[in-house]
Image 1 (cartoon, rainbow, N blue to C red):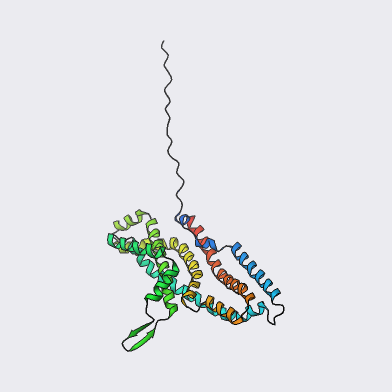
Image 2: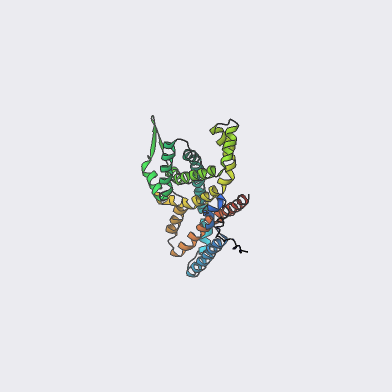
Length: 287
C-alpha cells in the first residue's frame, strides 16, 4: 500500500502586533515638565548659596544682602503683579483669537483652511521677541479719535505681541481636540438633523474641553515666564525694576541673589500650575 506523504507545512505570517493607540495627551509635549520639585530645590539652593556668599562679602557694609532683599520686596512684588496681569490678558486674548483660528483650521472651505494654516505656522515658528518688536514698531504710540488723543501704552503692545504665539498654538490645540473626537459623533448629530455649527458648539466642543485644558495650562505657565521679555521693549515689569534696584544700590554682590530671588517667585507661581496640569493629563488619559 502506498504511503501518503505528510501534508506540506507552509510558513504563515502572523498579523502584525500593533501597540495600543496612545492617548492624545501622551503625544503632547508638556511644558509643565520644566517645573519640577528638583528644579525648585535647585533654585532655592542657588538663592541660599548666593545670599551666603554675598553676606560674607558684605561684612564691612552697614546693610546686608538679606536686609536689601526684604527692603525691596514690596516693589518687586508690584512689578511681579504687573507680569501676572500681562500674562492673564495675553492668555485671554490669545485664547479667544485662537479659538476662532482653530475653527478656521477645520473649515470646510479650502481657502479658509489654507490661509489659517499659513497664519498658524507663521506665528508658531516666529521667535517671541521678534513678534514683540514687530508689534512695538508696527502699532502707533497714540490714537486719535476726532480731536482727542489717547496714548497707546507699551505694556498693551507687549500684551498683544505675547498673545500672537498663544493664539497660534491654541488654534492647533483646538484643531487637534476637535479632530480627536470620533467621527461617529458627527454622524450621529447629522442623523438628528443638527447643523454643523450646532454639532460643533453643542456636542463636539463640550467634549474637547477636557482635552484642551492641560495644554492650555502648559502654555499659560510658559507665557508667564516669557513676560520678562517685555522688559527688553521698555515695559516696566519685575525684571526692569530688578535692574533699577541693582543700579540704585550700586552693589555687585546683590546681582545674583536678587535675580535668583525673582526667579524663585516665578517658579513658585508656575509650579502649582504644572502639578495640576500633570494631574489632569493623567486623569483624562486613563479614560
